[in-house]
Image (cartoon, rainbow, N blue to C red; front, side, top):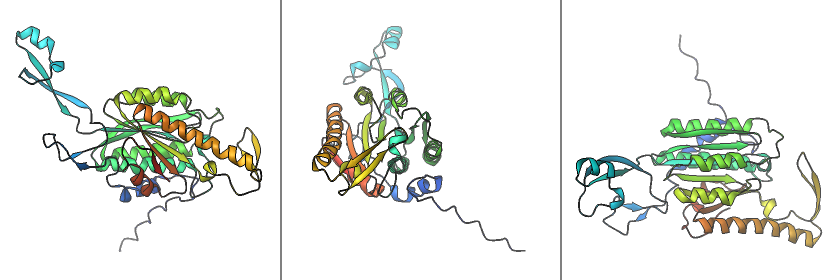
Length: 318
């Protein structure tokens, strides 16, 4: 008796509202190396063939040996030196697997979209896409997914199993019912700033409407990690819809937006522009990278474009 046909692979959900594992796993085919932009190394004495716009990885202690001329005096092992009477220095090696940590906001304000997908879905897709890029580089992935009243923390894990575990966390938190907690993700962001190890790449994906004291935690992250801020937004947040009367809001309150009034349109669009300028200012202040991601954009194309830009510039991935 011949075996029956193999069961068909699950069809990824693609309604722009919900997430499933299959859709995020499928992004691996399009990821490749995105999280670093190699360029010819200007110093032949440096290790490796390329330099990256990101900070180097963390350093792991390897051994202690007798101090030699040219060694960094900051690495002298004073305990061994005192015991032996001979100056010794600590040697370090570059961490083989850089931790890449994501903070993904999928709270109430992110459950909105007028184009291809909700902001929360676009953010999760971007986090999965970048996780696969990290895996391609041999890095470990983990982080925090935060929604209203619930968040999931995942310590950095290597290779494919790390990306799969991260994708499951994204889907589980996104698909959980929203709690009525006011929609602020301050506590999870504080936790994120505390768990990010020196040398990590730390990526925050949000609309940044409910993250509270962002400058405080960004300052902390910038001290010892490479921060990247990805602002996820919908086109209708940046540009008012065509003239008409629109009822907008959430479960708590609703307002009527009259886009037949030019002054209303002007103020509406100026508010978004001001928020974006504030984010750009924070990134410049702390040396963080800034990318914008529109909900209607192709995530892979947008991130490749945004992450190819120099550190000092404002990155637009719309």
